[in-house]
Length: 348
Image 1 (cartoon, one colour):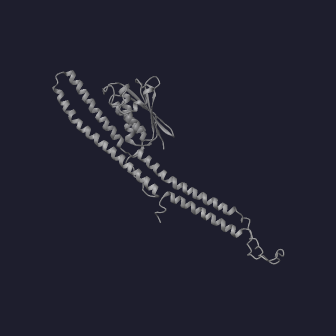
Image 2 (cartoon, one colour):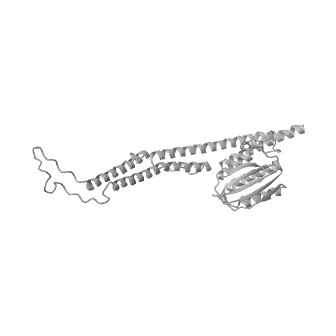
């Protein structure tokens, strides 16, 4: 019996069918009980018609029809029953979609989110099973990619270390320095790539954090190293992922110091969102290239010299960290010249 009504179609069709049958049965009973009396039987063949019968009619008397004895009651019942059936049917149809939508949102934030419960009608169970299978495959592919890159990085470090040792045998000091610089750049690119992949794989729970204290701490650390960094503004604590926000602000601050030599962080709080501006007065970025800088390994200058810039992952890591927090990151021109990075974090 369960197998017959195991599908969403069977449940919805059976519920509507029962509602329609019950509504019609009530209408039939109502009109049979309160309907007009039946007409007198016609005269039989060969019987003369002597006018209307003088005695009482030969049928059972009907109860007097009340004011509600017309079609209003059965029609109202039909309307109510069909509305209830339509509401419940729409709920049956929308429930699996809502479950899938919620699971997809959780999956976009965390690959290790709990799988969907494979229960309900056959279609819902099949969709949940397919979604869970997709989640497992995505997780396996990400883990496999991380293991592969980790192995490649480990295997590359060994010959790179050997090359650095063999550089000592080169007598040309200038050539030796250039080759050592190239090797250091390669090692930095490997480290940055692994850090980027680690940021993508890491899932962190949100917690209430004093963002103002974090900004002041980052500025103090940079000042202790001789950097020109200033902080201004105030804000109330915010629900964030602490490591993701710290990684974002660290990369933005490093970029500003690298290209401009100085930076300022301004906080502007409101009931709807928190604005964090990282301001510098360096060379800035042309408006046509402000979206391109968020691509992995994109650099404005042609060289890969780490003295003139990083490996091109700072902005990428920062935007993805802000995205995990449900916020937005955009670039604007600083009045008077330079670049302003605006981080918008919503207050849930």
